[in-house]
Figure (tube, rainbow, N blue to C red):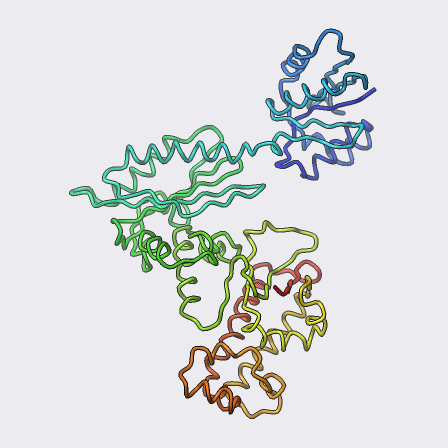
Length: 462
C-alpha cells in the first residue's frame, strides 16, 4: 500500500529543515523521534475534518484508499494519513496535492521520500505583500493631499522574507504645518493595518511589518527638490534637513546615467553592509546612486553588485550558512585593473593563476594578511617609491594600463618609455585600486564578524 501524509508546518519553504524532520517522524512515528526532534513545536493545527471531507468528496467510491486523522505524540496537533492501493495512487495523490495547496499544507509521499509544499508552487507571502502594497498605496493616493508622488525605491523578494520600500513625496500645503501632516500620515497607516500586521516608526521611516514581509514608507518634503525628511520619534513628529539628494533627483539622475552594468536603480540597496550602514531605505537608495556616480568618475572599471564580462569577482562565501545572493556584495573589477591586487594575493595564495577561472575560497585570516600587505605596498608607493620591497609589485606595467589610457600624449609616451617614472608621477591615482579592495574587504570582515571556517572569500576570474 502507498502511504501519504498531510500536515501544516511552521516551515517557510519546502527545503526548511523542520519539514524533513517532520516527514521522517510521521513515517516512523516513534516516541523517540517525536521527542528528540521536538516535532510538535514545528507543526500547526488545521481543520482536519474539513480537509478529510474534501478529499473523500473528490475521490470516487470505488477508489481503494483509507484516510485517517492522527494525533501527535502529546495530542497537541493533528495530521492526516492516507493509505491507498498502487492501482489508483495517481488519482489519490493528485487529489491530495490539490487539497494540500488549497489548505496551505505539506503533502509527504512516504514511499518516494519526497514532499510537496504549497509555497513551492506559488509564493503566498509575496502575493500577500503585493496585495497589501496596492491597498496601502491606493489609500495614500486618495488620502494624502497635496501629494507629489509615491516612488518605489526597491524590492527584495527572497525566500524567507520580503521587503518593499517607498518614498512618499509631499507637496506643500498652505497653512498646514508639516508636523501635523506627519501625525496624519502615521494615523492613516495605523488605521489600515490588518490582522497580523504592526507599524513601527523607526530609522526615520514607517514600517508596516507582516508575518514574512516589511513595507516601508519614508516621507520627504517638498516636491522634486525635497530637502526635508519627516518622521515619528518617541511618538512625536520630527522634521530634519535631508542633507543628501532627494529621492526624486536621484531617480532622474539614474534614468539618464545608469547602464546595464548597474542593473536596476536600487543599486546594492539590499546588500548586508549597506543595510547595516543605512537603516533608512531612502538614505540607502540615494547612497547607492552616489556610489554609481563615484564609480563613473573613477578611472578603474568595477562594480559592487553583480558581474560584467572580463571582470575578476570577489565575494564572501559561507560554507555552512548560505546567504541570499542579493544580500552579498560582489566586487567585480576589470581583470586588467585587478592585476595589481592579484600580484599581492598570489604571494599568499600561489594557486590563483592556476585556478584562475574556478572558485577560490580563501579563509578570512588570509584575507586579513592580504589587506595588511596591500596597505604596506600602497604606503611604499606613496612614501618610499624606490624601496626594494616595492620592486616586485611595480616591475612591470601589468594592471596600470588604465592610467595611460586616460593620459595625454606626453604621458602615454612616458608610460611606454619610462614606466617607473610614469607610475611615480601617477602614484596617488595608482593606489586607488588597493584602497578600493581594502575598503571593501574590511567592510565584509566587520559586517560578518566571524572567524575560522565561518567566513571565506571567493575569488574567480571571468
